Length: 151
Length: 151
Length: 151
Length: 151
Image (cartoon, rainbow over all chains, first blue to last red; front, side):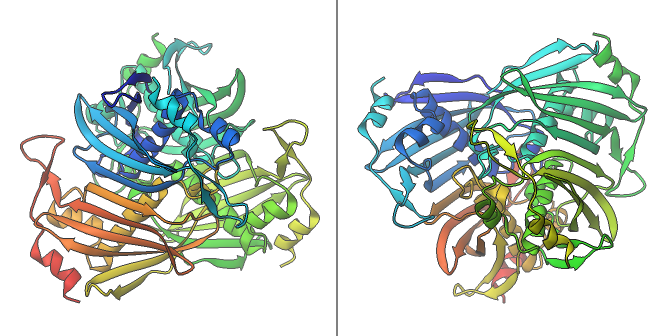
């Protein structure tokens, strides 16, 4: 369950935040969230962030002929475990725009305390016309960037 | 994202319904939901249904010394695929109470049309005191059943 | 970890069997396999079964212009739980060929005892040329069926 | 499917390597591995590495009264996508032992080329006797470390 919020962050850019309940299937035999699940939460929040900017991923894929925004680098720090039934908040925002990549920061908090912090670096990539099954990185259109910063 | 609802169904028992967005990671290379994900949705909805009855699973586990409600049988029919970004509604209710098991029906719809229908049969089970790592089925307390039907 | 085997079953058709270790992330806070994971095992075994028949799914998709073999019905019975570190065997075979669908039976055993039994009904489906985002069921080519029964 | 290998790496410590097939359910609508799956592969390989050292996780949990080896930090770089049906090799080894934490390096390669590189930092943690639902970090016993380096 989640309550989505779209807001301006201190970074003066668009941020997206939602609340989520930790489900039974998110947790492992130690009773805490199985850590790959946090990355599924990050991945979904990135899509919701782009949607909040007026760029839903499925339109993005069609409009710009890209395969999505494949990850090239990800980092996360885990400060506190979460358990089945916990309500967490995931807040995401663009930390940096580069020529053909973007860094998205994610902050998961529980009861007001930071529990997980992560950063995804994603590239703007389409299929390579010359090499089947390979991807080709392209410059991010300025109009895309503007949708995050112009607000 | 979801908007939970608690309501009385035509079965005159408690029902639980929530809306959910299909996420990128829920889908497979055919672009449709990878079917095991529907069972994760069912499993979570069963927990939300019990919570709506005033019996959150983590309290249930503690109060009745059970390990949860392990599945013994599940069935599902898939009428229509769902895709990334789709909004689906999952409605769940108890279809039948038996001595030590319960049948929970799940109905997933999209744009008002039934897309997936499923039924889980779950048992009320604790750890077997005489056989480590084995489960022992027990009768479901009447007070548990009453919470679903007394409304 | 798995050791694949291809063998003729009592049904006189092709069967595929592999051994698999239950991993930490397959299990829930009760310490047993989170049941949707079994369906991921089934789904993968169906793909391996077709591959053993000389029809790897990615070639199948290209050669016959289908989206895969979407599920229309699935059933499973759970007799015994499995836990982290357990070695299970998943054996799969076609139980029935129909005009445009196929029933695949899966049997998961642990230490020689049947633990989970399931049946998937899948359809031979391509994209509907007249309705975007819809699927169209087609007859299964006899040459596909022959690969399972001619051995 | 996998073929496990235990070998001494250039780091003069124990390494664990296995081969794995990319399954349909590991992939997303872009046809490439949904990235959280790589972390599930890492997590499982860490468990197999400890098992190869004679310390299977379930015995580790019992023998040392720890909840497992919770992650505090993880990083990964993604050089090349993998697709359904691909065979990848995941090689894992301890890169550094610290007082109460350990850094495990993972290298995923496909057709001899490095595709994903990752590092998990995990802590040796048990339940905190003074704070329920909290974890307490402890020093890693020397006998545990010896099992990785004495070979």
